[in-house]
Length: 195
Image 1 (tube, rainbow, N blue to C red):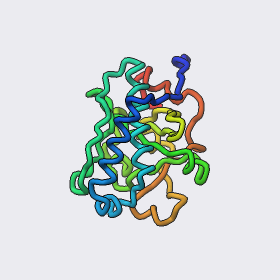
Image 2: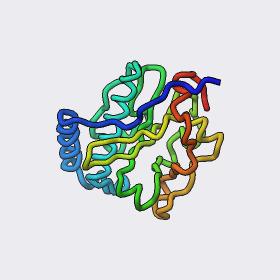
Image 3: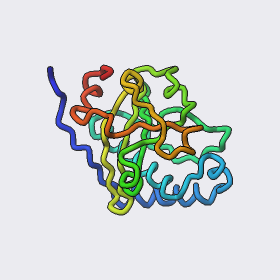
Image 4: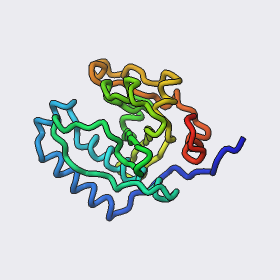
């Protein structure tokens, strides 16, 4: 069985993209601090981490000729909360999850998901929806992409788990790096199949 191409999964974010991301982060932090505290207490570092991860996955997918849209750095109100993928090529939806280095050191490789997201609940877990877990070094502007997995794969292997931080469990669940396959995590993209 073919293993697919060897993939370099560490992406560097350069100054022009970082400047654009920093402007977005500043605007989002200043937009409505009450809104974001109501939605789970986002911190500036969380916003930066997510934006850097999205930019890295965008660059990664474009490098492999996926015609995905650019990251949408739009500020959404609570009523506008969307479970749609962060990036799409019209056929596949990529849900990017970033974790910063400090969090990874404290909790291990882990990525939070909305517990009531239809994809997490098992509805609409079609094979064209992918999760892309990333570890982000906000100081070095580098992002490690740990793989690209279908939601169907995560359900099949019971990888949605309770959070290590108990007060998150009401609204969030987590996937943990220790449970993800380390080898060949990119193969399914080129095969067009669920893992």
